[in-house]
Amino acid sequence: MTALEKPDLYELDGTGPGLKLIFGRCAACEELHFPRTGYGCPRCGARPEQVTAEARAGQATLLTFITLHAKLAPGITPPCVVGEAEIAPGMIEEVMLSGGAEQYRDGMAIVARAEEVERDGETRLACRFAPEEEV
Amino acid sequence: MANLSDMRPVYVIGVGMHPYQFASDTLYIDMGLTAVRGALDDAGIAFPEVESAYIGCTGIGMAAGRIMFNHLGSTGLACTQVENASASGSSAFQMAVLEVAAGRRDVSLAVGVDKTGDQIRAVQKEKVSRLSDTATIPLVKYALMAEHLKKEKGLSAEDLAMVAAKNHTNASKNPNAQFRKPRTVEQVLASTLVAGTTTSLMCCPRGEGAAAAIVASEDAIRRLGILGGKPIRVTASVLQSETPQVGREIPSVTLAQRVAEMAYDEAGIKATDLDCVELHDAFAIEEILYTETFGLAPKGAGQHFLRDGGSAIGGRCCVNSSGGLIGQGHPLGPTGLGQVHELTRQLRGENGERQQPGARIGMAHMIGLGSISIAHILTKD
Image (cartoon, rainbow over all chains, first blue to last red):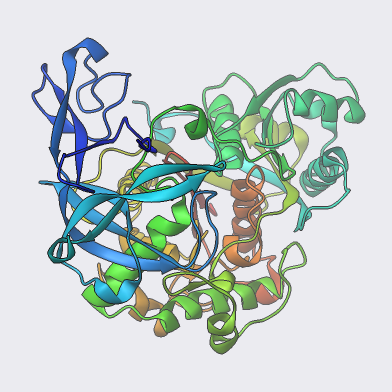
């Protein structure tokens, strides 16, 4: 089976290409955060043992998006689309979107799904968001 | 926290620069010495009068200052290297100012010098994944913000191009600038598209160069016989780091507002008192956002302040008369000190065809990756 590109951030949800996002939940402040790290709670500073993983449906609201025309990072092939999405109430993350910009609009529901990408000659499953109605 | 206004007065007594340029074979020592000797000549003092030095750089390596100062005579001065990403020069300046203000030294030097280094950032060693491969690239964050403001407030690609055209044109009159060609809005729009509506001429170049400033106490100014009218007082020095994002505003923009307000409070001024500002315009959208957060224009009206000529030389408060990061360049280590160089010359009335008429108060502002924000207010007594 093809490995996930960033298994610390997401996992397959068991429904084909759908992904769940892995948040951190802090026992000290009870707040949710993303991404979960091995360093502790970024909100209150609690130690790592206070933080547990919490997998949540990879559903988000797209806030804004643009097309990148230059290869700004090793993992991208322009033109490609990136956006800002609210992945949980009040939590805004930059996300990579599947396909071209013409299928997106601000405020639409998007979902995380696994797409194959090539990394150092190997195939990996990366997280790309797509319009909810498409999946 | 002690305010600068509660401490000894500190003055900039000399500034110098080596022009910013694209990557070359020029040695960092040659660039740094040019800037330091320029500042010494400008102040009219000899190097042995300098008691301490702070060197801001990001890409040269360890102990860059000590090696460079060997070539000015081994005076035994205190020497500290400062790295704070794009704000390294600004932070070196702050260290020198605070040391004199605290009464520990009477004359201190801040110098920023840089070459394009290996570009390794600590965030790459953090081992924390992000959903987007571009999540730590500032250009993408600001291009997304520009897109949001286009839909929200009618900000156009022409507005962004107008910022860049103004700053490139200012830079064309600046012998220390990396870009020396005046540009029109049409030329900026026609340059290579990078992200969203942001084109290559709306982005600062990478490069190399050096800038230096010498600060001194009133005692030292009297002892060294520095002429009245030349020293420019530093009336505020503030640095803070960002807090988590709330709402749509980029944390570095929220932070810039907090730092500016703290600086105004420390200097005892209002935004409307500013005559000239050098701000962090790594990307054109930043200048529009910061003119709003600094209170030069109402929130959401930064593009109108620009279109009305408020930020032009001769306008209500000229912004980036040097050409800013977009035009003068952004070699990282020197950038914040290049701003101090520009403001000092503005406030002395020595800025030639880039002179803001009647300039008395100026603010230098930088963002450092991470991010931190730093502001200094300079005042002609």
